[in-house]
Image 1 (cartoon, rainbow, N blue to C red):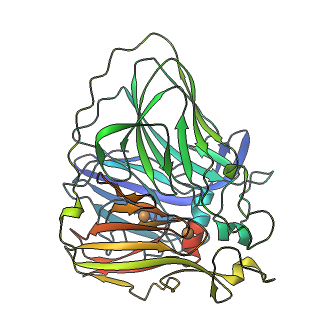
Image 2 (spheres, rainbow, N blue to C red):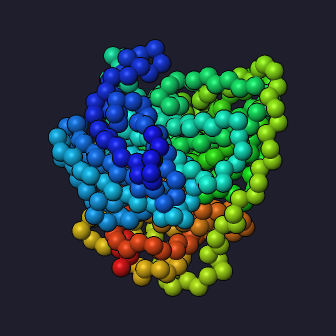
Image 3 (tube, helix red, strand yellow):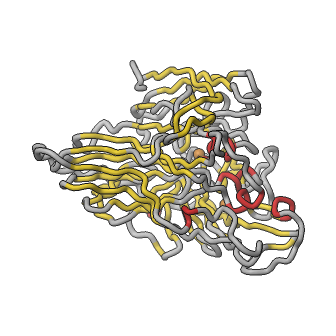
Length: 450
Ligand code: C2O
Ligand code: CU
Ligand code: CU
């Protein structure tokens, strides 16, 4: 769906749906009956108006992940709650200089976010560039995971899975199991990959093809960079260029070590499904036939802003922690017999989420430096709404070229440093762990720019 006259208006219903998943009939939840929901195409300066209806049995709402739009009122307001049977009108105006790129949407009603993503409620948003990279073809690849029982009904999540962050048994690309794509040799494809899994990290590889990274969460890289793999934390996106060569290739998600609760829970790590041990084949690409005509070179993208040359108005530290039985969890303690759900707390700076408390007060128009620390044995991918983050230092040290993300993984017992320019909007919004079970369990805070 794309905007006409700068305005894209649509009705979006979050509702139970029956779809085909592989060989099974699956009873899921979806936007407008399809898995994923419709792809929304916008340009910088466009307005997106969504009449969102809740046909679920629990409250929901809508979040446009990564879009730089107002968090207030009928904007990207994470505090809206749409009761079952009710509707809410969103009015989302993108600034004229909004970064082009791949974004997405999903519900954000605290306490229900992981359940609703795992059930199938997500869709892609493309903000088109006025000056796009020349390609033969573009594909939007929304990767998600789901667990269904034998009769195709969504399986319930267990407390240990919530603690670890649930990973669905079946990994889907655009709602399908290992779909096939075809191309001719000598073509250039742009793949817009969205990690819409509630907790699964994706380490993507593509054998037999030259893979170039041309964009991350926010905006385009000044020049595409050849890569052999790219890791997407939950919520991250990558834009990949594939210059096709004859043969059959497989887009694969290789195993990722994101920490664990080993030694705390005893035995098997919760959520430790096949995804953590073995590569998962996501999509096959078959390149055959007569070679296509050459595609023109990739023109350089605009130079990204670099906040390292700008004055910093304030510095803050945010510590992501998991506590057990009132104490902090570190390494391999543990001997409680209580259920994991009742003994674990997920906090930022010692506090679980309270929507009425304002955790950070920021002056509009200023640049801040946030040090994100993780005192737990698991990675926590940190996400800030509305304002993108420039990663200044990550787990491997200082980052050279400007890197702009809206989800930044904080490694287990590690630290990352980001800078944020709180430009263009005032209002109150949230930051949280994008392992959405952790978010629902309280690993979220509020920021007010005013
Ligand atoms: Cu993708 Cu606050 O979320
Ligand atoms: Cu978001
Ligand atoms: Cu987390």
